[in-house]
Length: 201
Image (cartoon, rainbow, N blue to C red; front, side):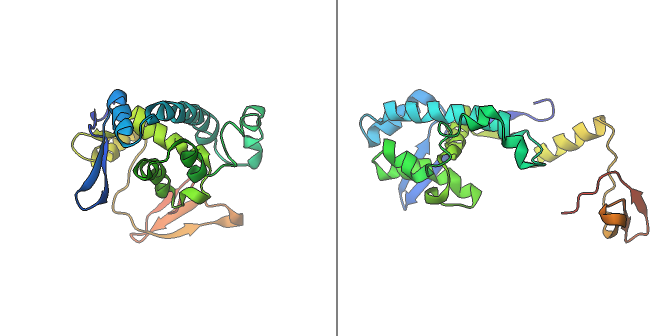
């Protein structure tokens, strides 16, 4: 990165199944396959298949979903997306998909747990989200040296380079919204800021 240093973690992370029962997820793919084989003979081949499918979902997901502004459902009525619906496994649950390939309960839990970050269960989450497994197992877990705040500092530095001016410690007291469109914000200090776009969160 131009703004902070990233280091790939090894192990990528540790999963605890209970007291003294842990699984360290290696960053190296060969070591990861060996770990799977230790728990379920023949599962390395299944893991390769699983991640190959997940790589396709990741590519389509990043290129066709993530970078669209989501202004309208019509954005997703694209023939490339529509023809990929079954390959993306939009109508199969993550739980069913994982269990069709693996039998070992620890491996199943390991592969299902990333969807919990979506606030959902594997039974109610489309298998499309195995793209999260591809991201963490194939692309790796990376840590910004100096801590997570380095990412914030990097974003601020880039924004300033692009001409953004920051006003710190300005508590907004009101947003002026004539005709249903926000035009300006006023702070408790009595300052008014005109804006083309107002994001209130």
